Image (tube, rainbow over all chains, first blue to last red; front, side):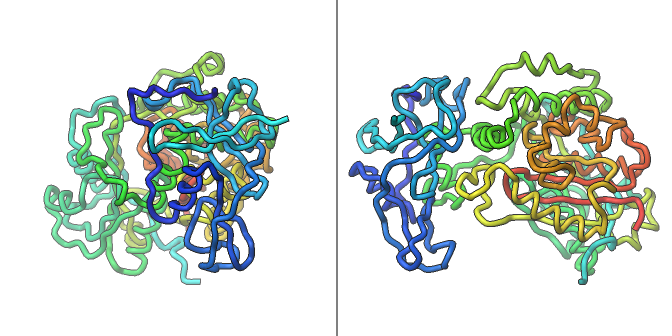
Length: 139
Length: 391
């Protein structure tokens, strides 16, 4: 695990509001979906009302392959929040679809994380009502 | 183009000391700085008819006018985001050059260290701004909870793309502390560090060390802006606003813009520089000194690149050993110490120092500092100024 929780303290739970509901409903059902423009096919994340490329309002939630690579990462040596036990790492993953997602790694030490590392999504059921998409190394 | 360039000037500066506990309210600090800035200019409070404040400052302009005996405001408003400081000067310049006001005061006063603050952030989730919503929805659940962590994410990618080691950022902090050690008003007066101190300092969120991060202080700055014509009749040598601009580009976020093609190039700063230099009619090599956003040391080499002072990927080499960026170098940076060596008031102290350089009154004076650049807001909504001693 590259992140451990102190369950005595609340883990920030994503608010299910606005343009983001579809993404988190997907996660709840263990499916990683991203917004895709119905007009020009552009993948968009974070979600927004319009396609930034063709300005269409017509969009859909489309399944991701769940595969990507680590684009950047950080390791907290001191925790900014009592819910997270330092040291822990946060990764920025670039998905095959081209969109990026902030997340955590599973089953890896911080020093083993590197940019370009191939990863795939896993779903972490942390608590009642809180499932997060995380990643593990592949290959 | 009906530009404000060369038509307005900064004519007064008031700056508090930088401490860990001011023992004062932010309103009082604001009033003290405004009085000092007006004294500096040779003006009195009733002369002021415009105020530009910052959204995050808890001190309202009407509390200021009530306290200071001002009763004739015809122009007032707010600027937002951490990188607003130069944008506030732009707003003031727009006010005076369009005759919306004659003398505009801008201020920031923040008890950032002691937290003697008015007001609290108690918004609930349904009232979040869209930018905050991004943070709470896609970053905080994964522990990316601090600004330092979000900056670290951008810096790691920058280091990867240009094969830079984080030790190289130490020269920024070291030089800022050298400059700050000469400034009796700053928090680190007579407290320089050596590169060794930096290299031995602890990581907070790898690749960002504690010593890469701005020094939180209680502090305040006020500035007075008027037209170039009126400036000529006041007490101080006018410091003309040759260039002033703000910048946001596609997918700008406040230090969390991870979703655009290029996350390591400070695109707002590049966009800003193009306009700023064109407006002022000067080139990067003409600039005698620069006061850059050093809230996080690694953002300084990135700014040197984006602003055109060196090629992409060469910013860390530019700062190496500190010789080019300290007094006597090609481009002395943050000559009051900046956020790393003087204290943190969101770049307002950087503008105050740029004014002192052009006037020739800095504690780390650069020879012939006729053109000085200020940049605020690296990694988010940005703003910049080019100030000069002649039009």
